[in-house]
Image (tube, rainbow, N blue to C red; front, side, top):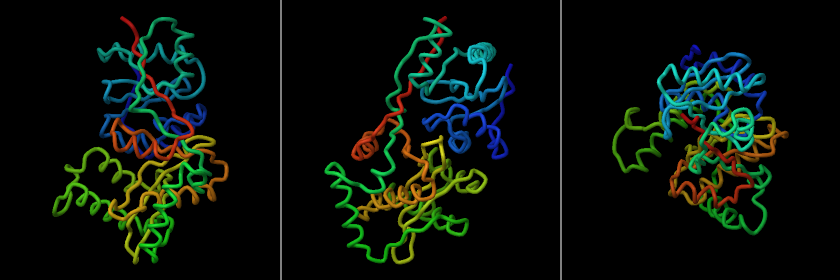
Length: 304
């Protein structure tokens, strides 16, 4: 049996090393996501034979990510099969790319059933398009930003620092109260998985190597976002919050952070703004920016 354990910030260095070998653009292959969503998906990790093994339980049941690293991939899959047998579970691999499916089929022909996971597709955008918002398709986004600047002439953008993180946390609490039309403090047990993941990211912001930006109006934080590098040419935007009643606030923080990332990481070509989880409003919002690529994801279950 593989010795799985819950991830801790101390695991970041070796996990990042193995993930870098795969150079995946999918947000599932990112240590921050593995760590901050561990409670929501009961994430466990292990290493062996030059690979990162990840076990999680989500929408499709308890599953494994395709092993990340380099070496004998067929042997790694057989190791996972024995591990799944030990748990009394079918061998289910999730978040597979087309390339991984082809590789799996090459080594295990006709031994897996495959299904697309459309709700899990990641949305990738060329960073220059989000930073400059050129062209007719993004005309509406430019209009939203113009309204924001007209209505909020005191707006400023700045990089998130350890000193400003508490302000972002308080803004998120207020956002939560407003969005759910609740009064009083929002307790962690009421926040749901996304709220817990965000707070975990904030608590370990520097350990995880996160970067972020915020927008102030009259000195008050009204929007913030945070992310980190995902692969050689892709940057992962993990969280983004803005007060919805401020027209253009979301478009503004999106554009300003894209400009900041482009300046800080000139090697980045794409921003991965992650999946829509099947939420209709979120899918509409992500499609409204006309993604340049979709990271398609599939699940594979080994036949009995």
